[in-house]
Image (tube, rainbow, N blue to C red; front, side, top):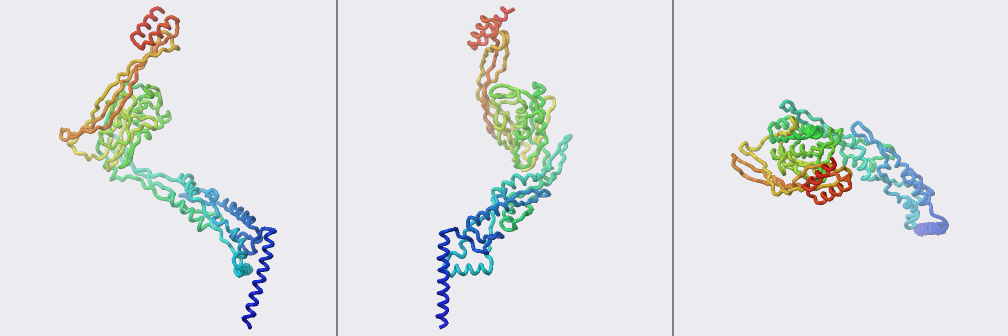
Length: 480
């Protein structure tokens, strides 16, 4: 008998729920359903809201939290950043839709149970959060690493022919990847929806060089001198300035030296004056004119030291202070002289000028046999005569004549000869260089008497310097 009564009650309950569902179905046709009372997302009460209203409320909540700040502690400094700048977002915004379905989906029993549960205890959906790792990395890499202090390697000073070891200094460096991960972990796992503080991980940047290591620098590996005795004051200043900037450089094993990086920028503030340099087959004045003699002299010292040449370019036209193919040009960033310390000990570069001569000496630890010597020999393959170009200048009077010197074109190769006990053991080609010819340029004035001007123009048209000189002499004689 009790079994029938229980069954009857269950049936009545089902029918009652079915009736409620029917009434709700009718209500749906008139308005959007609302979320049952007692449903929350974090601390936000969603009771009575439609899905659209709940989403709007959640979006406002997210925007509010994006204004919260993180204080990043780096060494003794602090940097503040909003979570919005780090791309804060809620990863489960679909809780609004899920909340609206609670108590309204599933079978009759499940819907009834969900509603009864809400009468006894609130349902709270926990919002989950994430930030943009790319935005975090960008912020850390631009705003946080500026507090880094690089280690200063131990180095050498050479005074009165004696080396003195100068101790280095320890630096500190931000662990960028560790910092990014620390910020991500904090926001996704520890953040309590309020302003927060994180101490970012840092690393010690240790200097290179010990007294034992630097004391190995004691031998001359190679030295070379060139003369600039014909240079004027400005070019002489540039050569001396380049030697000063390079002097005292210490390279540890594996380091690469860039002449351009060390001697630039070419400005008055960096000690340079206007002087002649090569440009498009012409000699023009530029700040730093003559600096290529600095790199060329160093190149030859490097060759004699038998260090690894990483990059070297010849000049566009032949130079006179070294043999063909023994030069090393610097031009902007597209021509540089670079070499590498491929020994297992540090090296020291000494550069100085005296009596209009520039000298570079490279010191290190000599490991080459004493009975082994080297010599570099330039071999000319071909020569191209420059010729003469005669130009009529209508802005100058008849009688004016200006001459710009020529440069022969040339192809040359540089060879390294190795001798053991005075006997040649090997010959190796070091480089091949091509130098462009630059014609001797003669500019003559043609302004003045119409008849003589026509004679001069006719003479220039022959491009024969003898004819031009003869006509010019005749015109000058008639004008006297």
